[in-house]
Length: 292
Ligand code: AAT
Image (cartoon, helix red, strand yellow):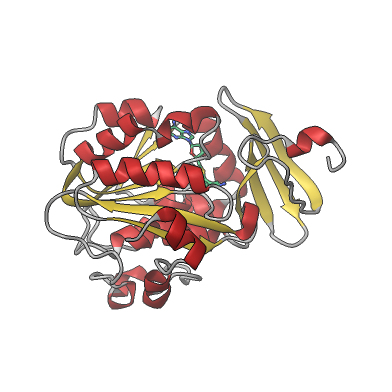
């Protein structure tokens, strides 16, 4: 598609496009919500693309899924109830499953077809759905959270697409208010929060909404994901009023949880050092995102 000017017109990343060599197209389809593409690449293994945007690759999905799951779950003592928004590939479920304290994992994904396609082409991720603690809800997260019982969750993980298309409302204030309501006092949110290189205004808006909505603490963390535009992605970590949460120093370190490793694939990216390092920001980001 390079050379086609519309290729550079994506509203999230105007003026840039990245290329990965396609070895073979494995699936191409369209749901009510989005275009779904799976292809075999030459360097990153299989790749899932939604509406032209890379969601995950075999090679670097570990960095994203492990960080978005363990940053919040290792920051509170024995999490029991967890809600995942989006995440139809199952990778975040796979990571949550490592926590033996967890009793219930709800997941609200809007698109059944994403789940079905991932079960076929990404068994290492969709294995997450096999955990008996998982309850799947197909529907819009906005609606799901409006009806969620107050104080129900210890942690909410928003593994959602970029805010164009079905995920538009997931960066707006009413959505964050319903998350805060659904969390117990001292509960935590970890929200996909784009790139500090490219989306300063969007992150600033999300931060100011979260600082007003979550009365505990609010932090920005980031990690390296080579196939996401700019090669990094951020997370917003927030806690509700209640027992204080210090995200910067994990109270529930993964290394102390034997069950996290038993009979499961190795953790590839996350550890307690990288947890702490994830909150260290470059000077420009500190200035632009405010002090924490
Ligand atoms: N774990 C890998 C990556 C994702 S997947 C995001 C998922 O969010 C998709 O399966 C999509 O169908 C789902 N989704 C989008 N909107 C909603 C909604 N309103 N309610 C429930 N689920 C939704 C994210 C990758 C981030 C990419 C960064 N550029």
